[in-house]
Amino acid sequence: MKFDYDVIVIGGGHAGCEAAAASANMGAQTCLVTMDMNKIGQMSCNPAVGGIAKGQIVREIDALGGYMGIVTDRTAIQFRMLNRSKGPAMWSPRAQCDRGKFIWAWREILENTPNLHIWQDQVKELLVEHGEVTGVKTYFDVTIRARCVILTAGTFLNGLMHIGHTQLPGGRVAELASYHLTESIACHGINYGRMKTGTPVRIDGRSVHFEEMEIQEGEHDYHKFSFMGRDRQLKQLPCWTCFTNPEVHEVLRSGLPDSPLYNGQIQSIGPRYCPSIETKLVTFPERGQHQLFLEPEGESTQEYYLNGFSSSLPLHIQIEALKKIPAFRDLAIYRPGYAIEYDYFDPTQLYHTLESKILPGLFMAGQVNGTTGYEEAGGQGIVAGINAALKCSGGEPFIMHRDESYIGVLIDDLVTKGVDEPYRMFTSRAEYRILLRQDDADARLTERSYQIGLATRERYDHWLSKKEAVEHIVSFCKDFSLKPALINPGLEALGTTPLKYGCKLFELINRPQITVKNIAEHITPLKALLDTLTDRRDEIIEAAEVLIKYDGYIARERIIADKMQRLESIKIKGRFDYKSMNSLSTEARQKLEKINPETLAQAGRIPGVSPSDINVLLVLLGR
Image 1: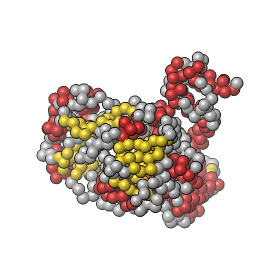
Image 2: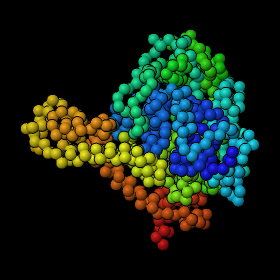
Image 3: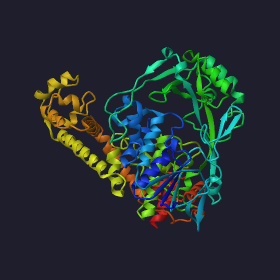
Image 4: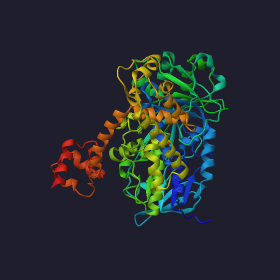
C-alpha cells in the first residue's frame, strides 16, 4: 500500500469530516487519519446541532455542499426553530440527534466518498522539508506523504481531564490524548496555548421522575437543516426542563475548594458563554436557581444529557447536589461531568484560507484554532478542505467574506482578532445579520461552491429551480395591483385595516397581519400561482415572503456592505513597514506588524487599530 496523497486530514471530528469530504469531492486524493473509526463525527458534548447563529452556519455548510445538515436531518430526534418571536429573518434551526446514529451516518458517507481513504492511527509528527509541509508520521511508524495537511485534532492535543482532584490524560472520556504533535508543530515557530472546556453528567433515564419536570416538545413542520434534505426518519422525542435550588447550590459551594477551576489545578482559559455550574454560582451568587435541560442521547437509549450542568467538581459532590432536585432524588448516572484542558494554536498565524502563514501547506480548523462548538468546527473544516484541494490543483484561494456568511465572520474574527477564550459564534458578531439569514444560505453560497467544483450539479439545479420559483412570486407581488373594493373584505377577515386607495400586493404583504399564504386565499391568481408549486412549496413561499417583508432592510444593509467592500478591495499587505511608521500609535504598529492584514478593511477590524490609524494609512496610500 502506498501512503501518498494530495491532502491529509488529522482527526475525524466535525472539522475533520467536513474537511476530508470537501477535499475529496473536489478531486484531491485525501487521507483521513483518525484514532477510532467508530467515533467519526462523535458529538463529544451535547448531542445537538444548531442554535442561534450556529444553525445559520450549518445551513451555510450545506449550501456549500457539506454534510453536517444532511447527517443532522437523517439522525434528528427533535427539531425546533429558535427565535420564532423575532420574525423569519432571525430564525435559527436546532436539532437533538441520536448520537450513535450520527456517527454511523457520517461514517457511511465518508467510506463511500470517492478519492477518500480512512486510516485508523494516530499522528505523532509533522514532516517538513525546505520550510514546507510534506506529510506526517504516525504511531504505527507509517510515513504518509501529501502536499497539504489539515490539522483538526479537537481537544486531543496533550488533553488532560479533571474530575475534582482526579486528573486523567485523554482527549475525551475513555479515549487517548495525542502527544508529541503539538511540539512537532511548535518547533517551527508556531505559537500555542492552553484552553479548557467541560461537559455535564450523563444520566440514566430510568432513575428520573419525569413527572416532576416540564416537557418541551419539538416541532413537526417542513423545516430542515439541509436544502437537499428529506423528512425526518427517526422517532421524535421530547426534552425536559427543571431548575436547581438553594439546597443544590449549598452542596455545590461546599465542593468549591476541591474544584479544579478554583483551587489552581486548571490554569487555562474556559468558555465564557458555556460556563460550568460552579462558575454560575460564583459569577451570579444572587440567583436562587438555574435552569437545566434534560435531553435524550438517542432514539432508544436511556442515556440523557443534562444541559446547563457542566462541571468538574468531585463525583460525590455532583451526585449529592443533583439529588436535591426533586426529579433526580433517585438519581443514577452513567458518568460524571468533567473538564478537559488541551492545546490550541494562535489563529492570527493563519490566512483567511486557514493555511499557516509560517508553514506553507499546513491548514488548521476547529478547536485547534481556539473555537468551541461543532458548527464552528464544521464551518472551518469545509473551508480548509476546499482551500487545501485548490492549493493542490493550482486554483485561486476560496475566501468567505463577512457580508456573505457567518463562516466568513468566524474566520475573519479568528485570523484578525485572535482569541483570548474559546470562540463561540453569536449573531451579534455579524454586522450584516439581515443578509445572513438561515433561509437564504443557498442563495449566498451554492453558486460560488458550484463554480469551484464542490457543490454538485444536482444541488446547483435544485437551487436554480428554487431561485426561479421565489423570483416568480416576488415579481408577481410587485406587479399585481389591488383595488379596495375587491380586497377589503379579505383584509377585514384577516384583522387588518381596509384600503382607501389601490396599491401593489408587494406593499400589502409588508403588513404584520398578512402572509403570502393567508392573502392568497383572497387573491385567486396568487393562489393559482402557489398551487403550481409541488416541490418544497412551503420553503419557497417562506423565502419569497422574507424577501418581500424585509426588502427595505435588505437593500439598506446591502448598500452598507458594498461601501465596506470598497475597503476590502484596497490591498495593503507588504506595502508598509509598520515598525517605522511613527504616525501610527504604538499599539497599532505592533498589531499591524503581527497580523500583517491583507486589506485596509481587515486592518480596521484589528483590536487596537483606531479610525485615526486607518486614516493615516489612507493618506499614505494616496501619496
